[in-house]
Amino acid sequence: MNGRFSARSRDNTKPDRQRTASPLSPRRGGTGNFDHMLRVALPIVVLAFGLAIWEAVVRIEHVPPYVLPAPGLIFHTLISDWALLFRSLLVTLATTVEGFLLAAVGGVGLAVLFNQSRLVEYSLYPYAVILQVTPIVAIAPLLLIYLPQPLAVLACAWIVAFFPVLANTTLGLHSVDRNLTDLFALYGATRGQMLWNLKLPSSLPYILGGLRIAGGLSLIGAVVAEIAAGSAGAGSGLAYRIAESGYRLNIPRMFAALLLLSVAGIAIFYLLSLANYLALRRWHESALDQER
Amino acid sequence: MDKPTVNQSGSALVALRDVSKAFPNGTLALAGLDLEVRTGEFLSLLGPSGCGKSTALRILAGLSEPTQGAVEWPNAAPQAGGESPIGFVFQEPTLMPWASVFNNVMLPLKLQGVRTGKAGARVMAALDRVGLQDFSRAYPRELSGGMRMRVSIARALATEPALLLMDEPFAALDEITRFKLNNDLLQVWQALRTTVVFVTHSVFESVYLSSRIAVMTARPGRVVTELAIDAPYPRAQNFRTSPDYAALCRRVSDALAQAMAAGAEP
Ligand SMILES: Nc1ncnc2c1ncn2[C@@H]1O[C@H](COP(=O)(O)OP(=O)(O)O)[C@@H](O)[C@H]1O
Ligand SMILES: [Mg+2]
Image (tube, rainbow over all chains, first blue to last red; front, side, top):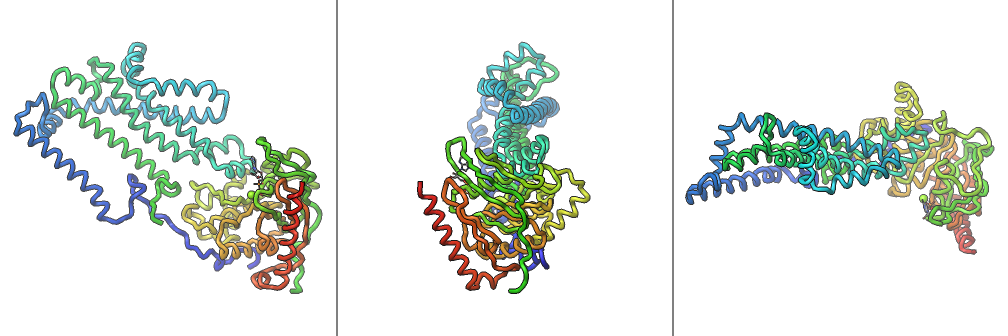
């Protein structure tokens, strides 16, 4: 048995295999089914209660629909205008997804570039910050002058979404374990190996955190630009529908479009959270259950 | 106790000659450190916390440059990416949390371009040596502290290094686990006939493990005393409780106390 740790000589401590939490409750899961049920049921109860009061007030007070439509009417409008609204939803979602993907590629790419070359970082980083701190609502009209509308909308989605990815990835690339970096150096790792096998995987939780923010922001960017654009056209998104319905005092459709936008935002958030969870559940603290 | 010592200490493998190290912030960590590491020995660097042990080890590994003095490799120096480089075990396990145990141990081989098929067998052999062959697919997060340190050791062994540098690898572990890992490390050392430089601030650990102990002064660190620990290998639990061990510990303790007093002088 010389030279090998015998099976018996394993540590007294057992491996503490982690239980994984649900993707959206990384810090609080694990207190049983009842708790989980409450977490789902309570918001639904609150929603139902709120809607019931809303409906009741509108009916009892005879509030006209152009002031405040009842939930029932909004739902009815959603169905009757579905074809129109759905087409608009797809337009906005397409812009959002494209803006998001460009932001992901651009943000991570630029962060890696900054990390590899300090000169590039010094030259460009201030402008990335300027782009970020200037309110997008103020940039949108300008972009609409110089770019065709679909491109301007996309540019807005990209501008607001890319900075969190850039900032988070940069932070991640700078947070690599020093000892691991030494270890890679000891074994003669090339820059490419260092980046691909150490820096990027180690930054993954940061990158995914940035992407989670970017998803929501890219929807906001698309909406802001659509509203700023304001003109009718074949490719009119949901935000445009909201503005247009406002001019026409079609308040129920306004609410219906808003509802769709919210649902889209929630869906994006959940999808990105799920991706985050799936990518990190085996190793990162943020995706692990607290219970040991 | 009549078994011969397994590892005959031989010629110098590597030496630090009059090494000083000042950090950019002005901290003088090492001043005039002389140390010779002999082939096949188990050498402990013993000194109080902050005396520059880690710094000396990093200089040996080539991870840090001495401000003055030189690192001498009488024979060929192990080149970065070479066949048999240096193994390094840090105080923390320093594993890649996103990679399985297997891929963590595979890392040095991968970085050196060993073909995957061949590397796989070597990874399993290294895991086998530390008793973790059944955990190759686990992730570091799923292991206990002691098991993670075993993975770290397996990773250092994967390239079958001629020189294994260990920086207080067991300092963060509980005593029971530490004693076990001490025994297991000695077995691996004897089987592989590698050279070990082991940094510790524990007199007891250094005496138990080492064939030789270099005692350092407080910062700025240098080696003031070198003590051969002649107790024969293999050493096991009965050595820990022997009067020999107690006597050796007392000698080394005294040497350490003197070294710290010497360091306090201007
Ligand atoms: N990168 C660094 N910059 C400045 N001072 C350092 C650095 N690394 C270590 N030191 C200082 O050098 C001294 C020796 O450190 P170290 O070699 O880590 O000691 P040990 O391992 O013996 O505890 C300490 O006082 C420490 O604060
Ligand atoms: Mg240290």
